[in-house]
Image (tube, rainbow, N blue to C red):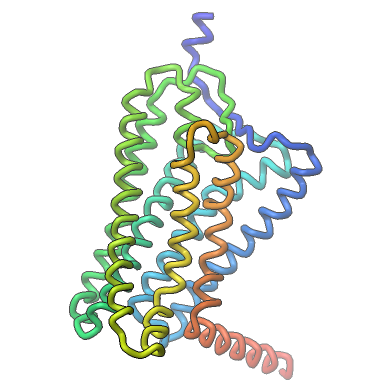
Length: 318
C-alpha cells in the first residue's frame, strides 16, 4: 500500500459522459458539426476582416481577436473530446493534460477581458464619438489587446504549474471530458487548500473585474442612447453594440449559471452540459451573432462570395 501511495500518476482517464454507445455516436456527430462550424465561422471571420478594407476599423480589429480566441479556445477541448467519443480512448498523459488545462485557461480568461475591452470600445464610440480616434489610438488598442493575452497566459501558466505540482497517486479518473482545475484537485493526494484559495481569488477577480467593466460601460451606453432625440438615432446607436451585448449575455449567463447555482442543485452532470455549451457551442455562436446582426459583415461576405464565384466561373471557362 505504501508503494502504491508513493507512485505518481503518469496519465489520467477522462470519464466524459456516462451514456450508451449509441448516444456517444450521436454526441460525436453533433460535436463534430458544431466544431466544424466553429472552425469555418471563426477562420472565415478573421479572413473576411483581413481581406476587406471596409472592415479595417478598431471594432473589427477587436472582433478578429475575439474570433481567434474562440478558435483556439474551442480547439483546446473539442479534438480530444471527439476522440474519446469516437474511439473510447479516454486516457491522456500527465503532460498533455497540463497542456490542455494551460491553453483552456489562457483563452477562457482572454475571452473574458476581450469582451470587456470591446464593451469599453463601444462606450467610447457612443458616449464620446468626437474623441473616439483620440482616445482609441492605435497604440492604445494594441495595448488593450496585448493586455488580455499577456495576463491570461501568465495566470494560466501559474495555475497550471500549481495544479500539476500537487501529488497525484491514484485514482486517476477525471470526472469530466477535459482536464479542468476542480476535477483534478479532487484527485490530488496532497493538500489542496492553497490551490483552492488561489483559484477562488483569481476566478473571482477575473469574473468580477471583467463583468463590472462590461456592466458600467453599458450603463453609460444606455444613458447616452436615451438622451438621443430621434428614434432612428437611438436605433442606429443601439445596433452598433447589439451583437456584442448578445455575445456577452450568452457567455456570462452560462458562467453565472455554472458557478452561482445553489449547492443543493449543483451536480457534475449539469457542469458537464454547461461546459459543453461554453467551450464548444459559444465559440460557434459568436461569428454567427456578429455576421447575422451586422450589415457591414453581411455586405463584406456577399462581396467575397461574389468574387469567389466570379473566379470559379473564370477558371471553368479556361
